[in-house]
Image (cartoon, rainbow, N blue to C red; front, side, top):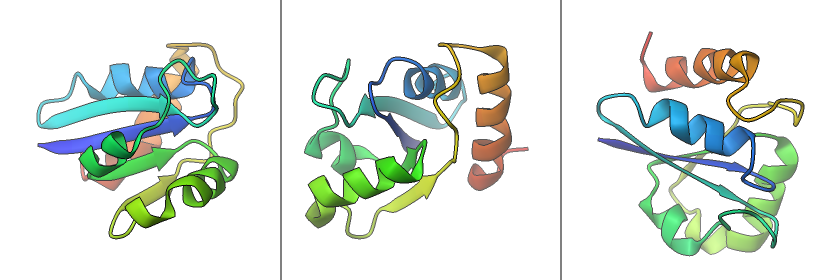
Length: 109
């Protein structure tokens, strides 16, 4: 069972969509969180420790994650998906982009 953590700023659109999509796959567990203080679900040390792979939506998220949680990222795989904040929750285009970027990384085609 691979544990995937998806991170964006607010945890309202991109990362919850990713959590919903990839939770449906057998052998995958997915959670999502936001880096901003007012995120729907704020990132936590526990979530970082739980995850096998951490996906951030933009480079700015990678930088913020490193600044706030550097000691806990040792040995963690952090991947930037380069998905800009221009989609609604469960937007069909967002789902397609997420699948096209994440599935090959996981070896699922």
